[in-house]
Length: 461
Ligand SMILES: *Cc1c(COP(=O)(O)O)cnc(C)c1O
Image 1 (tube, rainbow, N blue to C red):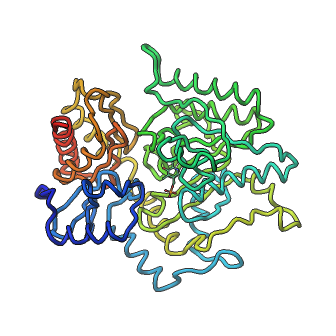
Image 2 (cartoon, rainbow, N blue to C red; image 1 turned 120 degrees about the horizontal axis):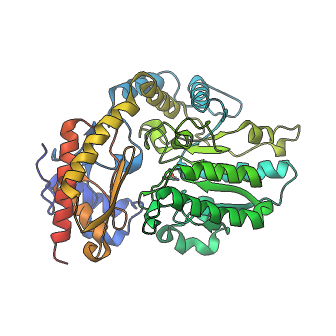
Image 3 (cartoon, rainbow, N blue to C red; image 1 turned 45 degrees about the vertical axis):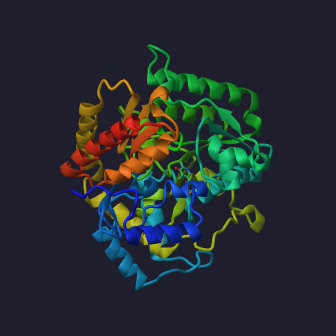
């Protein structure tokens, strides 16, 4: 077990890296003025779920390094695949050329959708995948003579990235408000977030209410609407807001009826995170026929947390709308590192593990252990509410009166002293660990999270 991190003051090597980082690196998602109180943890190396600083103190990577890591750090199989690829082909442009890793990855992802989404367009980060999906939707309608369909619909508190186009379909005030004057207008409809249930109302009923709100919008404006974009099953950046899978069937039905594309942003929830490889697969539970979105975005976990890679899977219908003798009717979008062979090869190593090991079943087993260990410590705790889980995501909310000021920052800093790297979203504490949990990890996580919670709530303000 790692020793608690003496914080502050940081040991000399860590402190030196912290000082140099604050002086020269403009950190993401950070008010740099707070760096005095909350300096970055200087990570020297990592292995499995553990991150280690320059003094050898270990932290459990409880949020999988911003939700990207699947099989732990320095995974032997991914490392070997990358070393091999490095000596074979590091990069070549994907316009006018092709290469085995891109082809194999596209084929294998298509197969995982039963070839419902048979065309893969590559990019490098999640926000770009969202931009691509929005552009594809609009442009395919336009190519079909329906250029009026140029509005988008997104969900309350949804998150789709922070470039200007992706931010326009994002409804998280803290990221969006400063840029609001720059953004195209989108329709924001009710989220199916199950926490909104009235007394006696089920999650499925909340999903029905949300679908009814969407139907009302479609009824009046579908002629102008190109696509609806959603995060299936869990709106992660909203604070792990979870909803009933019935919502996915409802939106698929409405999008078919009103001729609106359905974009599934599985950037965070894909790659097994919610218990199935694609979250959308859960729309077909209980022997219902499989249904798919028209466009599906993947990123984060697809490369196992190794390299920036994103992609958009498209239906035949959308793909075919671009086929023409006229170049300008093609989808000309491009990024320089599109389909980078190293990133694709890491993704293939990730898919190998899903094919060759019972990853999802193993997660179900270890997941039960973590659910039970958290319940044993948190059941009946009046300071928290909405304890929830979907696949490899656990979350609870600290009640308003108990959180105090700067709750997330204080929790994060006290987590460090417990050997945890964890970052609550506002009052939501969540765990999104890599898929390598053993019993020891489960016990460690449950114990340290609750210890951090107690320490945070006991801290005088
Ligand atoms: C992280 C995320 C994005 C943006 O991905 P980046 O790689 O950070 O640009 C988009 N959508 C969802 C649902 C995400 O969680």
